Amino acid sequence: MSTVLSFFNYWVVVALMMIGFYCVIARGNMIKKIMGLNLFQTSVFILFVTSGKVTGGSTPILREGVEVYSNPLPHVIVLTAIVVGVAITSVGLALAVRIQEAYGTIEDDHLGDDDDDERLAWEARQRR
Amino acid sequence: MNIVDLMPFSVLVPLIASAIVALLPGRTLPWAVTFLAALISAIIAALTLPAATEVTLSYPFGNWPPPIGIEYRVDAANAFVALLVSSMASLALLWARTSVNREVPRRQGPFYALFLLALAGLLGITMTGDAFNVFVFLEISSLATYALVAYGSDRRALLAAFRYLIMGTIGATFLLIGIAFLYMMTGTLNMADMAERLPEVRDTRAVRAALAFIIVGLGLKLALLPLHLWLPNAYAYAPNFVTVFLAGTATKVALYVMLRFIFTVFAPDYSFVVLPLATVLMVLAVAGMFAGSWVAMFQVHLKRMLAYSSVAQVGYMVLGVSLVTTAGLTAAFLHLFNHALIKTALFMAIGTVMYQTNSIKIDDLRGLGRQMPWTMTAFALAGLSIIGVPTTAGFISKWYLILAAIDVQAWWLVGLIVLTSMMAVVYIWRVVEAAWMTKRPADLPTVREAPLSLLLPTWLLVALNFYFGLDTRLTVGAASAAADVMLGAGLGGAAP
Image (cartoon, rainbow over the protein chains, first blue to last red):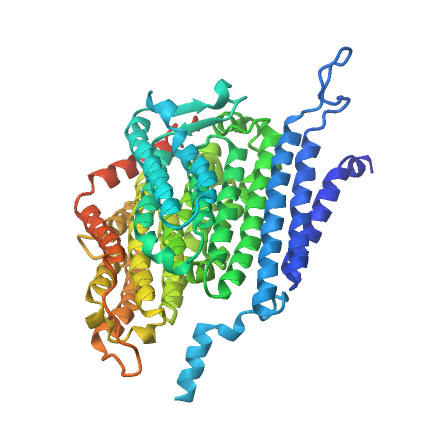
């Protein structure tokens, strides 16, 4: 039981990762896909931050009376990764807006089938 | 100023120039500054290659010595890839001017700024010696690429860009998970340092998982067979210039990073032992060679045909890697270089056709051989190179790949390589047949030969294809040096 609980963060990471991944794969709606992608990325951030915790360690600010500090490097890395994640979200949303303008929908199920070259050529050959 | 201090500017010049170019008005100025930046970057890379072949160069940022600081670490392998990427970018830019004026008629500043960001990202991936830095640069180049693909005039470009974004992000995040595991186990992000510390923790599940995550993540970026789905549409609907640039560079850099992780960070005696990596890569490579060539034979949309052909060619490169011999890796690096030349030439020729006829369907190309003889001849000659006819660059890399396969007594691989080359004959011949063997139907418009600004760069690339088919000193020398570094004690990884 204690081992299960001591890995609590990792359970959360795995759960979030799977929920996010499922969302990306199973949902046709592009906004939901992007939300899934965010969840997926966030779980990796938590994984990174978790690795920086030192048992009994204090916040990594140099001060008197403290000997053990948590590792600050993962936090810095995750900050950069969050910036990357925000950039991806914004590019994704911008694309979704333009797809909405061009197609009138953002449900990705059969989008683009209407102008598929191979199918159009095949239909043209059938008509001949 | 010595070469080590100059080296980082290969990445910094495009990065800084992109911020300037974004603000420039009009069309001529952004292009000129972009070309200048890419050219400077290529010249620096060309100066770096001979120096890096002799001794591994290291540039610590802010004078913080690695592994605490971030370093650029350049040896024969990544200097070769960096030279390829920056020189292909410069060559593509020569062709870009006329083509981009048509496809991005208004302010071109943001477009070229994105291009420079993509270029800086790709060069950063190749030069850096820091695992997390690889991820950041990968995302910089990918984000710029998504936006560039979305510039395509067809509305399907948006869909292609969105799907590329989803798959690309998943791939990059997988890479990040792998790096997180490696960091947890080794406590370092510097690749050379990681390679030294990994043997102590090699038999842990986290390290094995890290290897698997990194390979799948980079496999997505590389468009290795079952993970290639983003590539055909992204290439097909992107603006022609973007396709020309991506086809020559993006997948190559992903392959390089994968090799860097497999061979230097993990060392081949680990990565090929804990996972059946040689078998997996070989099966996927052969499947990719077949599936890519097979699907390419039936494509109506010619850019998509060439994109599927790219999936097949990635197969050849990975096949060379999967042999895990110096000869195999040399062949992989050779094909990495030669395929960039071939595909860039082919996409330029097809882009030129699209510029003149506004169509890319094979049916609209009927009888074009007489109306655009120079363009179609360039296409046919570059086609010879992708088939692997002697005296072309494509022959050299396939020849080395076959030699590498014979070296390990894999005769069936030789048969497969020849067979898939025959399939390349089929899809190239379809175009040649349509262009020359059929009369131009009356309902198709009469077109004229393309302007010289498009023709000359295309022919330059075709000439390079033949030059590197005859004079192989530079390519084979650099490729075998790169393979030696990868397999040998490159960044400190143990030899097998």
